[in-house]
Structure formats: C-alpha cells, structure tokens
Length: 201
Image (cartoon, rainbow, N blue to C red; front, top):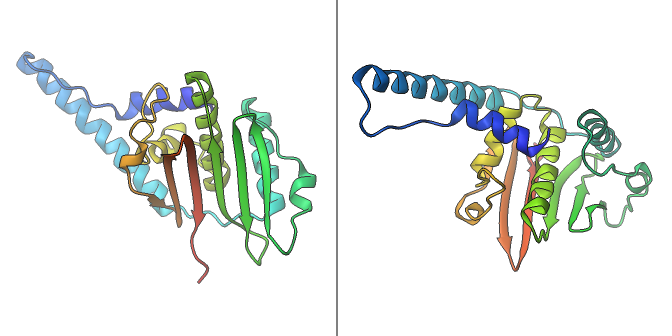
C-alpha cells in the first residue's frame, strides 16, 4: 500500500483531462473519459460509504498493521508488548514508526481503538513520502480498504496532492466516512494525521 503506487492508481482513475482547442471527435472523447472517471470516483465513494468495518481491538490492530507490513514490505512493525502493556490509568500506546514519525493510539473501555494520531517532522520529500505511507497504512489497517484508488480518496479529501505535496492540507475540513473521521494539518512545523472513530451509541 505504498503511497506512490496509491497515487499512480488514483491519478489514472480520477484525473480529468481538459483541452483548449481540440477537434470535435477528440473533445468528445475527452468528455467521455471525464464522465467515466467521475463515475468511477462516485462508485468508490458509494462503496466507502456503504461499508462500515467494526472497530479493531487493540491486539487485533497491531496484528493487522503488522500483517500489512509483511504483505507490502514497508513500514515499522508494532511491538505486541507495547499494546499488551496499555495502562488502565491512561489507555493509550505510542509507537515510533521512524525517527521523524510517531503514532499515538487511544483505547476505549471495550479495548477498541478509539483514535489514532500520527505526527511527523519530515525534512525532505523522501521523508514526506515515508510519512504519507504511514498515513496510508493506517487507513488500510482501520478501514480494510484493499483498493488503492479507494484509499487514495481519503488522502485526496484531506488535501494530499501528487508528489508528496502537502501544502494544501490546512485548507480542508475533516473527512468523515465509514463511521470515522480523518483529518490532517500542519501546525508549528509538525504534521498531524488523525483518525477518530465514531462515538459509541
């Protein structure tokens, strides 16, 4: 679920091509492609809204996360010991995913993942890609999205642009889908990506 492959899939399926002075047939073809891509986008959105995975228990969370690592060959595994030693007084755990990326998760009374925040201080484009890979990994872990282009919709809606461009993330509202809310911002030289589960009924 590498961000680069996610974004290639996303741009191939969603990018709308426009032209200024095309021949009638060529222009019609472009318009048809644009309509088809928008229909694909709408189908993905319907799929995302319709599916609502159950919240993961804390021990299941690290197993799914680590399983994805084994599959895609990327990322820092979560030590099961860290999850098993969650203090009752402060039900949360912290994981360093990279020297510049940290994950903090809170757990509710039912031992389910309630919220997750990934903070990052990347100093290069390469490090931004690595940080966004962690965001993508979290989305896939919690939402069980197997389709990279569907996962990329979440990234797009919170302001992530091609080539690890994050200059637009502060201009977007939180994005709610599948009974959860995702948000990202950049404040005081720190990037924050947040997942908040739906409040218990």
